[in-house]
Image (cartoon, rainbow, N blue to C red; front, side, top):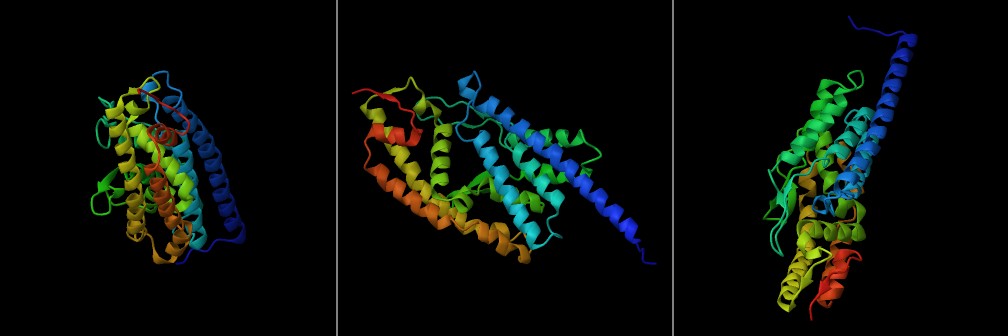
Amino acid sequence: MELRLEPRQIEMHQNAETTSIEQVRTVVNKRIQEVIEEIRNRYEKNTDTAENLDFHNARHTENVVKRIETILEAMHKADPRIVSGRDIFLGKVSAVFHDLHQSFEMPMGLLGERTASIPGNSEKTSADSAVNFMSLYPNLFFDNEKTLVQDAILSTEVEFDIRYRTVRAKEKSKNSIAAALVLADTGTAGMDGGPAFIEDGNALFRERFPNIFKETAVFDEKEQTIIRQKILNWSEGQIQFVRGRQALFEEEISFFQEDVRPAIRKLFSKFEESVQAAQEKFLQRTNMNFNDLMADMSSGLHSKTLH
C-alpha cells in the first residue's frame, strides 16, 4: 500500500530537513574557518621555517573550497537528484580538510626536491581528521556521509601522467563529491584562468625546490646557469601541464551523468586563457637575466648572487 503523507506531515518533514541543513551550514562554515587558520599557522607562520609551504597553504585550501562549492552548486541546479544541498556542504568539508596534514622529506642540495615522505599518508591522515570532526556531530552527519568525505579526500592523491605530462588522480573517484574534489583541486587553469595559474605554478616550484629561494642563498655563475635552466624548463612544462589537464577533462567529467556535464563544462572555460598565459610567461622568462627571473618566480622575494 502506498504511504501518503498529510499536508501537515509534509510541511513538518520539509521544516525538519531545512533545519538540518541550516545546522550543517553553521557547523561546517565555522569549522572551515578554524581549519584554514590551522593550516595558516602550520604552513605559513610556523617558527620552523622549513615547515612553511608556498603552495599547499591556506590560500590553496580556500581556493579549493570555493571551486568545489561552485562545481557542486552548478550540478545541484542542473539536477538536485544528483547533488543535494547536503552534498554541497560535504564537499566543502572534504575540500577544507584535504590538505590539512602534509608529510614530506626535506630536500638536500641546491636542486633537491621536496617529496612526500610516505605516498598517500597526507591524504589518509587528512581524511581521518575530517571523519573525526564529523563524528563529533552524530545527529548531523551519517556514517555513509563520513565514507563519502573520506573517499573524496583519498581521491586527491595524484600521479604524473607521462602521456599528457600533467597530473591526474591516482585512483578512480568513488562518488560525485570525490570527482568534484579532484576537479576543484586541479582546477586553477580551467576555472580561474591565466594569472591564477601562473601564480600557482610559481608557488609550487618554490615549494618543491625551497633551497633555491632561501633568503641567505648565494649562487656563483655556474649555479645561476643551472637554476635558470631549471626555471625555464619548469615554465615550458607548465604549457603542456595545462594542455594535459584540458585533454583529460572530458574523461574526468565522464563520471557524472550526462545532464549535469554541460554545467561543469561551462565552469571550465579558461583552459585556452591559461595556455596562452603560460606561453607568454615562458617567452618573457627566456629574455630575463638571472636576478629578474628569480624575482619573477619569487613574487618579490630576491635572492643574493655572486658576481
